[in-house]
Image (tube, rainbow, N blue to C red; front, side, top):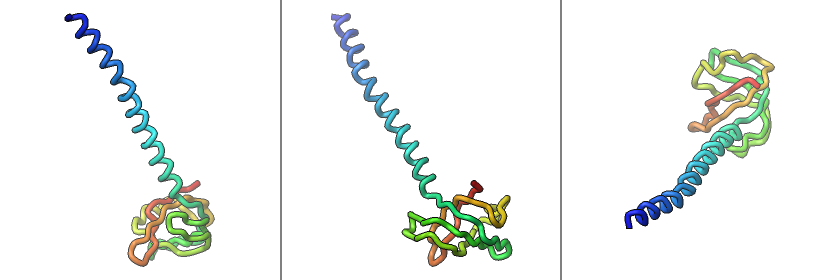
Amino acid sequence: MKSLKISMTIILAALAMPSAVAQETHSHQHKSEEAQTAVDEMTTATIRKLDLEYGKITLKHEAIKSLGMPGMTMVFQIEDQTLFDGLSQGDNVRFKVEKKGTALVITAIEKM
């Protein structure tokens, strides 16, 4: 009887393992999808003008899918002045923008 209990315990543990492995795999896939979504939210652009004094940047950008906006050249605000570090007119960049009130604000920007 004791060996039957041990055998049943081993069988039940073995049956439970694929589920745990599947959950771990699903969790990893979900994190990868979130990382890809963050990259997908970035829009490609070329810097036309930097205005450090007023915290503004003029970009000629591709369509911004998250806002349903076609490609164009326009001015954006940047709340965090450190985002300007290392950027120059003419640089190709990828950026993320959010609508805050009536303003479109760059929340992330990186050189390509």
